[in-house]
Amino acid sequence: LAKTTQPISMDSYEGQEVNITCSHNNIATNDYITWYQQFPSQGPRFIIQGYKTKVTNEVASLFIPADRKSSTLSLPRVSLSDTAVYYCLVGDKRYSSASKIIFGSGTRLSIRP
Amino acid sequence: NAGVTQTPKFQVLKTGQSMTLQCAQDMNHEYMSWYRQDPGMGLRLIHYSVGAGITDQGEVPNGYNVSRSTTEDFPLRLLSAAPSQTSVYFCASSYSGSDSYEQYFGPGTRLTVT
Image 1 (cartoon, each protein chain N blue to C red):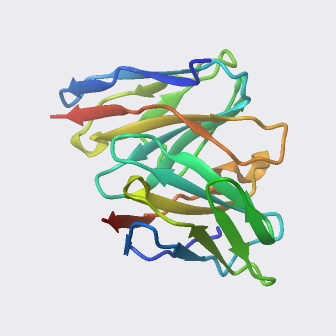
Image 2: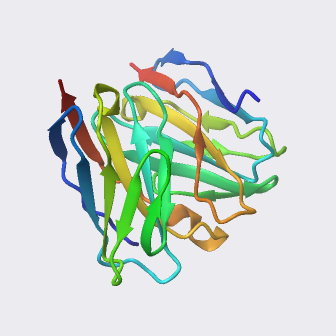
C-alpha cells in the first residue's frame, strides 16, 4: 500500500500562493497521484491528478519530482473559499488495486482575510 | 444529471437495528464505492464495485453488506447496527474507461447509532 503523509494543518492569507506537500515513498510504478478537496458536511471533490512532472488546470497545479516519492499541490492566490481539507491519494485504478486507494487524514487549510 | 444521490440524509438507529443506505448515480459509471468518515478523520473504504454483479471488500467491511444488481444502484446494508458505526457515509462513482481518477461523491448520510 502506498501510504501518504501530509501536514495536519496549514494557515495562509487571502491572495497568497499555498503549497501542500504530500510524501509517498512507496509509490508503485502504476500509481497515479490524485488530490481532493472537502468542505464541511460535503463529499470530497476532485481537484487534480498526475503521474509525473507538472500538471496544471484552472484550479491548481501539481508538481511531481522525477522520483515520484512526493508531490506538491499548489493553489494560486487563495481566497477564503479555499478553506477546506485537502487529501492526497496514491493508487492504481485497475480492478486489482481499487481497494488500495487510501484517503488518509488530509491537510486542513485555513485561509485568513 | 443528478450525479450521485444518497438517501436518507440523516438517520438515527438503535443498537441492533438494521437498515439500508441507498446510493444511485445516473452517469453510467462502472465503479461505485462506499466510504465512512468519522469526525476529524479521512475517508475509509468499506466496499466497492467495478460493475453490476461484482463487489469486493475495502478497508473496513465488517458489519456491512453490499450488492450491485444494476449499474445505477449500490445500496449499503448495516446488518446489526452498533455505536461504532456512527459516522458519515459517502457513496462515490467513477468511470473506468478513461485515465481519470476522478470520483464523484454524493452528499453523504449522517448516521447515529444509540
